[in-house]
Image (cartoon, rainbow, N blue to C red; front, side):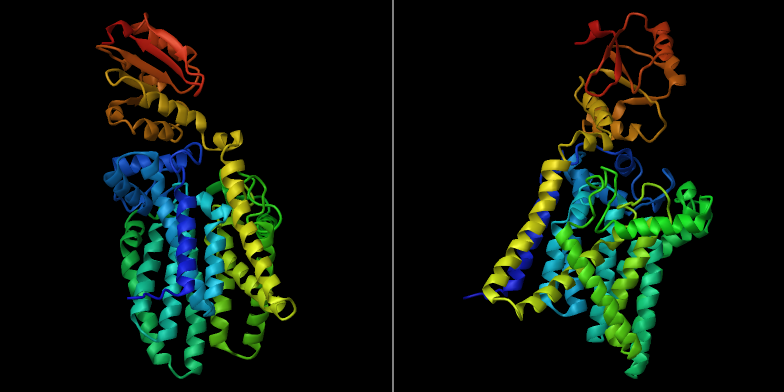
Length: 514
């Protein structure tokens, strides 16, 4: 029996495979380190999983910690298991971009291009390999609006309910999602105008109400968490980095907004943890297509508003409103400008605009150029657009010493040192610099199950160190006077330094090491 598989399904499968390889290849060693913010997700997934919200580190929604805990349960504690969570989220986002783009434009080639650009994007590859909550935001937005457009097109209620459930889950992902209701309410308003013009407002009202109810009940637990005694945690995230905390908030907002608008084509995030410092977020040929698609969308919106073509307005207006709403988490802050992580929610829209621009360019040129030549050039264009960001990530960014520093490579080295020390040692770590940096050391060391017994203490606790056998005390920084305190009860120890991590280690009772 012959099975006929549509060509676009084969192409999509190839794109998803590419996305998977680029997000899983050398996942345990690239990025070359472990930033304490993501390490804290891992240590709390091990120590206190399944919480709705974690107030530490300015507050974090708990979904990714639950997923991390599940991954650790299935695969054991390892860097691969830890970073597999964002990698899988990233892979499904690529599929979501395809589904959303096809549902909006009703053209499979636009969906395939958008998925390919996302799959090979430095921006998305990078955050798909880091355990930050933010990677869930593009995924949630893609599927919630895919189901909305699907329900709008086929006039069935179940996609609206599915959209509501997915949208409700978004409140457990990343702080920036709190602005997403602005996109949703704009979509519902325009859809209401379109349904009223078509005299179908009753059916839409029922579907829209079902969607909102599904959102409400899905998000209710975390909503109650904040309402019943934790409202202060709801407002703590931005703090001093907000534009409203600057001497001239209006000027600061305009400057931040302009820098974030310029990040796509001119100067991107300078932080090596987020980007190859200063590179535009979009590889420049893709960035040109993005501008074409963006401009044409603006023209379409203007024409549809003038003609009151509300149904035709809905796709373009959704993308444009989505774009500007998801720029706000960056534009409303005044630190690390531009900031690719805070505006991660625009990634699907950027590549959908670029794919739309690519379709417009191809349609324009095929009327003027030889079809064979145009096809050849299109293939070359796509190949270069896909290969360069991948090369930039794996062969230039990953081995760069600045990247290792950006991911606290020295803290990883301390964790590796502890992981590989003999199990019969009593181990103490003297913590400097607060509770956050040590999280990297904890998670790396924890890959050895025996290291659950490591004691993490502060300098004031040094006199309490007791040993009945071989013991090591690792100081996360130069111990200076703290070493003298340790020597009072343990005068015969041996001090050494670990050149890789910069840590100082004091060995006690080594002669008792069996």
